[in-house]
Length: 315
Image 1 (cartoon, rainbow, N blue to C red):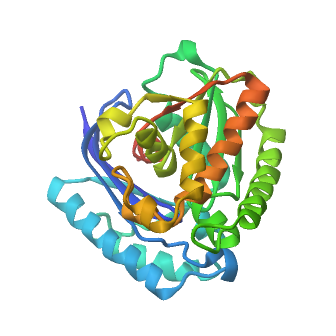
Image 2 (image 1 turned 90 degrees about the vertical axis):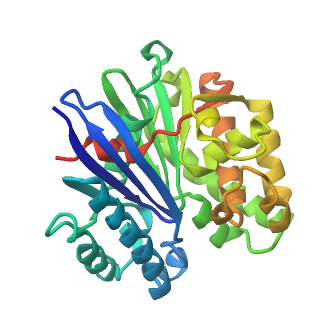
């Protein structure tokens, strides 16, 4: 017997929807996937609060999703909010909005803020389901707008996890002020990222890993660019592999380009244009450390991530 469920992932930069049928074994069959760039975390790193226009952008997108859920007969939904919402002092305004919108599908439903640890575990569950267990242990990296989750695990589950406060929006707003960024700004960003990555790797023993799996928009865009795709194609990106020399080349280019040059790249989503340079710095820093500590020489990219983990966890 299958149930039709929905998972919503509301991050710092985007809000995403997965409507899927789930069977008794927990296997998902996609019905619909959607993504909107809403930049909910606009200014949160600097001010500690959501701006009203960011909440309104998110409400408009969520209202669209609610209509899709009603049209497709969704019976249960889980909406998860992550880094920006953990940090915002006026998050009750956000919760009130989600309660009003989600109530049209499931009375009383509201977004929930999850810890970085749970975020990491949901990301891992979604990311490795289609990979050969023999390639494990896996280190899964979910590179978001406000935070980056590192999770080490295998077919038996998660061994260690850490949520680092480095993401493409946070790094851009904090360090990369000009277009293109100056060498001083890039150096400051690399230093900040390196320190946070060091903290994460004190907790996550990545030397045990055999395979690096990257999820979320920065990683998938880098993979698409690494394959020289003329436009973004999820089927060609999913489970694709990019070796480290090519990854470094793509990341370096993204940091050095200006806004117009990044916008002209075929696979680039317009909502990522101004922040992907920050994400590229996080990605290349992780590549350095994973190669040094575990001898990992390539990145495997999955289209399945925390969103799938959320849908699998719907009760």
